[in-house]
Length: 206
Image (cartoon, rainbow, N blue to C red):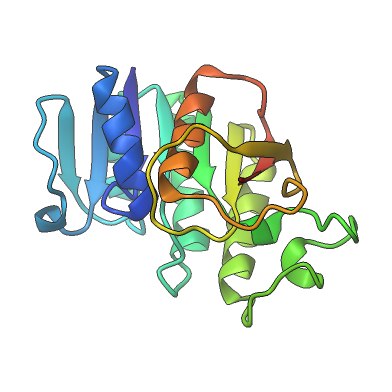
């Protein structure tokens, strides 16, 4: 499989890269700073560029089968600004499957289903800026014709892959408080081979 990977130098993207390469897949990774990309592998095509540049995104998506975006908010509008480039580039390249890493804040609140978690008492975050940015990206995907899945981890400490976690459509598993970067990447990777969570958000936690 040929995979377009955005956010390959990040905490979740790095684990995803390892999983995909271990199974023999080919990766096209868009990175701003190639010096931060430490993986040397014959199945990796590195593209220096920026997800905010439409041509760079098109070059990355072209010739691939699926798209993985592990981009974070970067304390900016990178998600809401780059997502339109991803959508149009995928449509132009006839690529329909995309899996992105979101945040539990954009899941529905279990105690108040009409609200997103970041709008409810379930959220412990002092600021909603990152959740609002993730929400904009999610809404753009929802309005598209793509087969999207948004993986929504709760508190996300660094950690290895255990494969022992819980997931639930559109809400966070009951009493979920954390999930490792490794297990988040593992679940996202599994979605490349599954149609169980097409066009929905997925809460993930231990």
